[in-house]
Image (cartoon, rainbow, N blue to C red):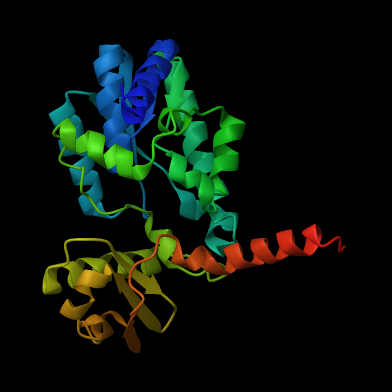
Length: 279
């Protein structure tokens, strides 16, 4: 048995131990595999729940509905309202804590009402190496991350998904629209709608198949795509009609959590500072 097969068996065992579960389901690579395996192990004792809000592109909700039907899982959509939270709107570095806090509270309440024993999410082993303030909310709510506990990485999850015939195996990474806004810059419904429109325009106009982010820097839009697709994009990209005065293409290409880079450097400097015995 390979290491990956052992991890998969561990995943199945963990889900079975729960008895029943509510799956936080975005329709992305990770949560789709989680829902598929959970449904296989627990059957009707699984409920997939997708949170619809201003931070979720409309097309992602449609895909989540379609994938849940494909898997044969029970599925429910709830409405979350992150923008009603002033802390979230201010967009601090721990923005995700407030968003996930509301989401997990809603999911825990729904799970209890449905008689389901656990709430599970699609966090994977790679997430442990990134800045993830939402993890604190997850811990406080007692949400379980079976993929992460099994030690499954994104690469392994994609490989297993492909073997199982899941259409999401090569789906680009998914993140909420608020992740395109630099920390400290206010988040508004208008801004999120503009980001969604900008990404839809770029993807359709240039035929982008891989990862895509339009970072909203106020008057400037910075486009990030996988390096192999940079050549497809012109600098203007037609985004000025959405209100951007300046449009740039990041020649370094798409990077997961690129707006977290300053925070990562700060944390590294702090660790080095304390390692040297300084106060």
